[in-house]
Amino acid sequence: MTKIFKTLTLTTAAAAIVLSASASYATDVRVQQQGGLMTEVAASAASSEVEGAKNFIAGMGERGINFLGNQNMSMEAKKAEFSKLLNDSFDMNTISRFSLGQYWRAATPAQQKEYQKLFNTMVVKVYSNRFSEYKGQKFEVRNARKENEKDAIVTSYIVPTSGPEVRVDWRVRAKGATYKVVDIIVEGVSMGQTQRADFSSVIQRGGGNVEALLEHLRKQ
Image (cartoon, rainbow, N blue to C red; front, side, top):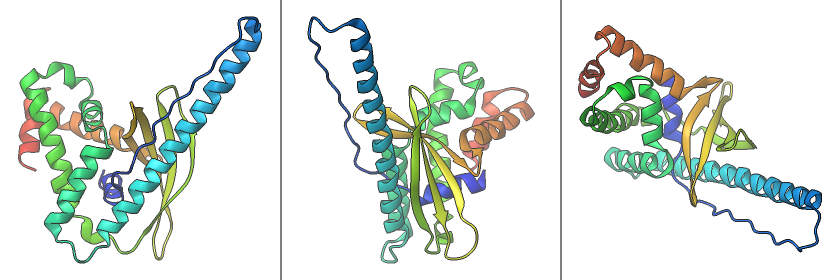
């Protein structure tokens, strides 16, 4: 959990790439030819989307390192930048809902609303305290691939001044004209899955009541 969220401090928002594709067909083109052309167009669009996701993560990393390494910025200013990072670049609603798992449906609308607010606050408060751990590490995006209909996986590495690299895979989802991060996988460990297990444990210890998690988060 700590290792996973620690990598969030190395990223920030970037300009999104708007994807579009169009094609026209002659009336006498055979169905097989249409299918082939449509496949080519789909493949081209998928390739563009993957490249867009890759550029999105690379831009986030560059901006993140810029503010982390800025010695003239106060801690409060860095916290504000980190909060903006989350709002702009991460689909926090999707991440928080996934982290609550089956208990999301068990929660009342009021509990859901408070939970999402507390979740965001927890991430900013807990992990902005780790800013001092940035010691000049580099952020390198090396490749990307289409994972499924919705997502692309962008592979990056945190490169320290000494010691082993850390692999970080970003699950990126196109959201209209922009992109959002919906999960981070650090050395094969999913942030979402890890957080879900942690929250489930808290709720189970509280007798299966979502209120137990809310109380836990209020104390963070």
